[in-house]
Length: 246
Image (cartoon, rainbow, N blue to C red; front, side, top):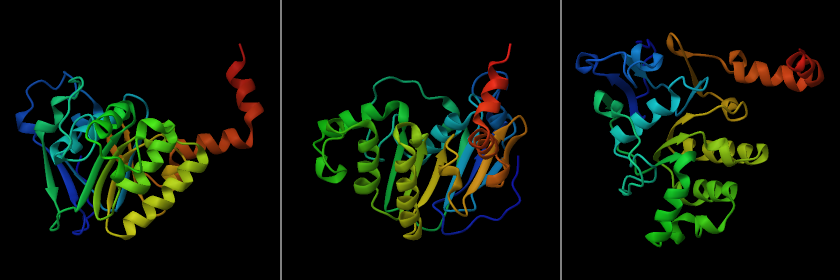
């Protein structure tokens, strides 16, 4: 799928291109995923881009491939982290080309909720407490996420986040949006896979909804995350009665 919008030239990652000629088996994972099968060239046009969609749509797979191709450790961390707990990442990164901007990011981090424990362990092993606001293991899950955002994300960085809302309360998600805004205004770029209707409300973000036809740019109010959450909050009893009806 080719996007027609022109990328901003001050972004660190401007586009991702799939080397389709190298794919031999389109029926095997991860090439069977709609987001991969339909991918040609995907442009990034905003400092904040969200990948949204149903479970199994390929959000995390695509995000991971972009992060690994950019030079991040598959399990997360900065580009200086090279630990490996268990090899589970897909080969998709080898089939991508990233078109980068004119400037190199001064900072960067790949955050994935499912392996954040391993990243926290590596931070302790390397005694990097000062940069991370203390030992991440000595804080709650949500507190450690926020400590990372407030202390380790230094600005002018490339930040790739996979479902960061997993550990955050609604109030902390709002705090995350405020921190993202500060970092974006300082020249940072975010690519985030999320299910959160709160995070998706970030102003002027690009929302790419992944479906059978590949990524589709979608206004916030037209996402299922917004419409379904809004309907539930307005009529919880009606929706639950319908859901529980025999």
